[in-house]
Length: 448
Image 1 (cartoon, rainbow, N blue to C red):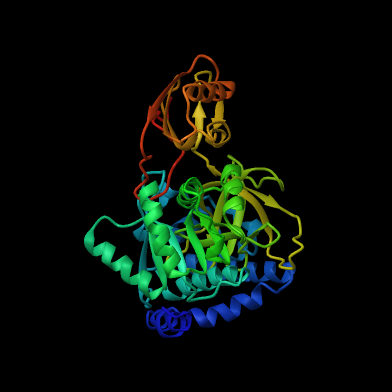
Image 2: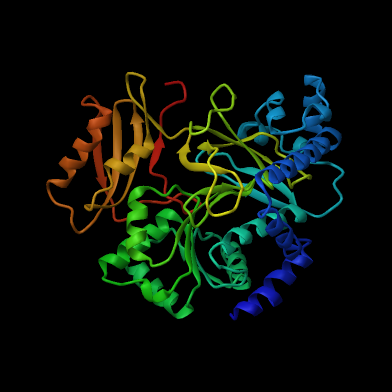
């Protein structure tokens, strides 16, 4: 589809009819990103005061909480005052979904769902205004790389199993001027077939799961196919952390910027990488805190739990919502000219730790540095017991009889000699329901 048809006759009109005036908000957020840091901070705090007032007056869950804490909206004037309120966990959202919604909200509401490694499916109600603002911020970030609404996108994503849901996504893909590559089928034969489809489509950019794009690039490299002639403006990786081995291959495969996007289904984009390589927090739309295990703010450069307060959704405000990630705040100033504050890359889920028998913890990100060899295409580890780890591996053509021994030695350098390590060889690692590839799954009881 022609880009201008996709933008002006499909996307923008359809969103407008749904009560999501993206064009209006795009102009506003573009103005916001050109403000000074102090102006952005003042804007954020004013929006926070509005959300707090909404919660206090209209949301049953917060009305009860404010009363129990003997707190009024006057007590919350800026992000630092949020420490007077408790952190909201995913479990608490699950158990209080109805009480977190304004029962008298008059505008149309849209249902959003999110699941993930916690195993909990959460439901969120969003008004059209909030969704439009999230989309506007997304396109503001994409414009940093000259990607516009309606530009052709190749989307490496999950594909619904049910036929009706699949047809619905296909229609959405058509309106958005994109084609979808299934993250469930990243195999050599599939990727070679999809490459022909991609080349005919002539995309402007790639977007999708880091591991799916990585798998595609691996098979293209193995097949001797150069991706330069696609002339992409950008490759935007989301939903999964980009590790050094991903970045190394991407730099070889693409002659365009490869960009990190950090966000969530609940909040939209939380941070986005600029051309200088820094992650800018969307502080004109979110309050983002980084907290230790005692819910105290961490110092700049120190890892902390990412806790988000969405400033745009008044139908179901989530105040101090712990999204389950670990990140690092930064006080550095970016030379790109945009003064939205910075954060360092997310390190991973707080539950992504290998537990040793002696009680020590090893972050599962370690796997990406020990198991990523030229001999391995994909890998995944299951911790069955504190002294038993099962590793699933998809071999590359370079895998030899000595490869397993080397991989085991790499793992034991951090996990010790006493742990039992077993290897399982597959043609393809099964994906999550979403299509993502989780490197580590703990099957231990929380009480171990």
